[in-house]
Length: 319
Image (cartoon, rainbow, N blue to C red; front, side, top):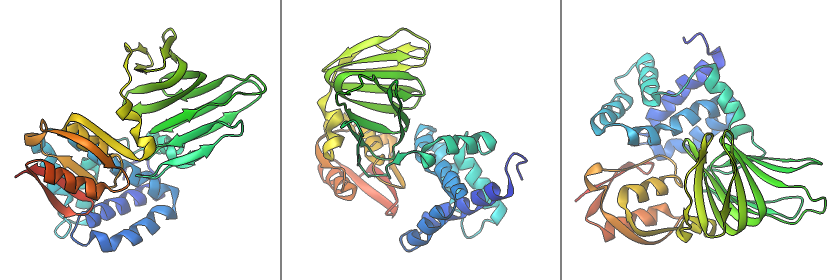
């Protein structure tokens, strides 16, 4: 046993490993209700499963041969011992921190946030000052209003912000791990994207202040990213990027692998694009609330097929 894990955390990891292989078997659909009951039973369970949900993003970054070998190890449900299942699960998690720092990340992460949206959900929030937030899929935030300022702490995901005038004149900020975004009477979106924050401005201005760099202004019609060390050059706003707030995913001659990566944010499970067809192009407007229909549309529009191990395990391959 990892000495940095207590008995409950270690047990949760073992159970998550078992659920992982069960949900990737042919009986996954019938297991889902029981899995959800387990998931909601304890914070440790949600923490352990959160590590597993990062599987898709990590494996997409792996070389194809290594990713395939890793999945084969996890899928050996019937022949693997309990210890081997856990070993395979740990391998799938790759660089995840499974000790105290990982557990601390979970308590600071989305599960204990003031507001949290589920995968595929868009959650509206009305603020006490009349402003509005819209949480995109799998997002989490805290609201911290005091006498000096109005602060939104974005823990995870993406939000659309529509500010309102404040009678007390308090400034409005969104805080991310990389710095502060100050609203200057505006509507804008903020997305945590790996090691940077992405900001899109639809009305008026925002001021971006990275933790260790000077502030930068973004005007309406501009977008820009920043890290703790500084801001990237701004670019013209792509209106299609904000279509999620209307429940749409818009592709304009987009690479298929990038389209699939974006679609995967809105559905649970494993959704992967075979590298052999990654550079195919797709255009169209698709409903985020029906990813199954979107996948069927992709298969109809392009020379590809859907390889489905279960509803939650889909690979798009060449015909």
